[in-house]
Structure formats: structure tokens, C-alpha cells
Image (cartoon, rainbow, N blue to C red; front, top):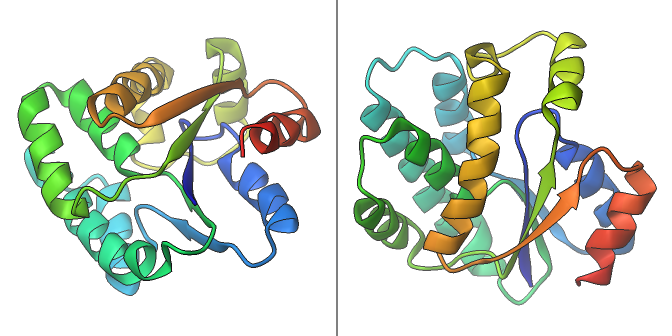
Length: 189
């Protein structure tokens, strides 16, 4: 089974993936962007916020996604795959830019992924207050520097992106205890 843990920055994705690894000791743990050698370079480039064009940024994510599917996802489809983000995030970020049509977003992602998407996506939802608190506790990257309103728009777009890609989305309150969130995820698996 291929699943993804989605959520905006600071939602607790890494924490939940670590907890799931304890339950699925043979799982393939990966992330997007950055789950391959080329992906790590692309991730650094995107997080530097140097791309002037949002289309260029989107295409970088697609390049990472294509490599990730070919190198990590497709060869391991018979195993449990737990991914920190997925195509859903990529589409969500692109939706907020409003430069690429929804039809193009789906077609380009279908091309990059060969239509291999997670069977279930878990969205760890944050409130504005909790997001702003968590952001205040860390050094911000190029995406986080765009602010809480931007990140909350991404969070809403994750829901729309899952619908566009026809992926089952399960929303979980990210302000719950770590243990409660893990139990909720496990109940769906």
C-alpha cells in the first residue's frame, strides 16, 4: 500500500511518519520533494525560492516527482510505502498560483507519475493559531516566509488537489496529541 502524509509545514508529518515506521518496520519511507539524489538537489533549489517563475517552480516539482516514482515508488508497490508529501502537495501549491489550469495540472501530474498515486492521503490540518505558534518556534525557509495565510491557502488546496487527482483524503486534526493522531491514521490502514 502506498500512502502519503500531507500537511503544511509544521503540521507534524515527520513525527507521524516516525511513529508509523514503528508499526510498519519494513515500510519504505520516502519524501517528496527530495526522495532521490536528484530530488534532494531540486528540493534545495525550490526551497531557496530563487525561481522567478511559478511555472518553473512547478516544473521542478514535476521533475522530482517523475524521478521519485521511477526510482522509489514503482519498484516498491508490493510493499508499504509511506511518503512525506506526494503529488497532492505539488498540485495544491500550483493551485494557489492560479497560473496553470486544473486540467493541465492533472495531465502533467498523470504524465510525471504514470498515474501512480497514493491509495490514501492523510491531511494533518492546523488552525491558524497553532500554525503561527509553530512557525514562531523555528527558522523559516523560503516557502514558510510567504506567511501563515499563504500556508493556510495551501492547506485548503490540498483538499481540492486530492479531489482533482481522485485520491482518498482523510483529514486529521493536527492539534491532537501525537499518539491520538497515530491511532487515527492506523485505524484507516
